[in-house]
Amino acid sequence: MLREIKLATFLLLSLPALAQENLQPQTIDGAVDTKAVLEEFRQSESRELSVLAPTIAPEEIDQAVLNRLMQEIARDPDTSRARLGVSEAQLQDIFITLSNARSFINGSEIANIRAMCRAYTNSELRGDARIQKALDAYKTRAKFTTDFISRYYGIVLSDIQTGLSDLSRTKFDAYMEDRRRRMANAGIVTLGAVVENISSGTETVQFHCRR
Image (cartoon, helix red, strand yellow):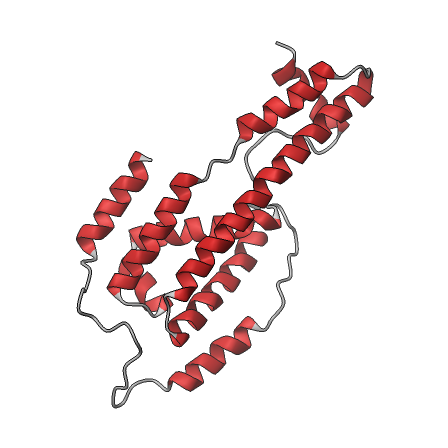
């Protein structure tokens, strides 16, 4: 939490809000052809997302992408502003929104472990069947968490998109689509207990639930 506050403070100091700035697109002589740029980005967006080697849950991809965007903004705000086609004030708003979202969300791994151990302790089954029941309880609780995170970040994403001009919205959507592809195929894994099957899950259950 302290880290996010420091990052937010840094950005507030480095990206002063432009209170009188008109955030609507302006017509400027010699400016880039907006329609051509929009069409180019729309064409790039039309490609389907193809995950070659998924190692992160689909429900977690937007969260991971938006957290990465927040880091990029903090590290190099000028590049992020140019990439998204937004004003300094808009970039500041995006950063604060993402910082607040990150502070609010908790992975709830402890709750997942507790659900697993509760199922294991209360089960009358024996051997692998008992382990499987515990693993199923973990997966059910973990799915509940990822579904909630997915819905929450869907709201965050919609909130950001609402404040953008047509051109900025198209650039932002193209950025999200590109980063989703990269994130889905980058070999990134989520943290947590290894509970994919009996073989890998037995040790996890015994470690957490037999104390």
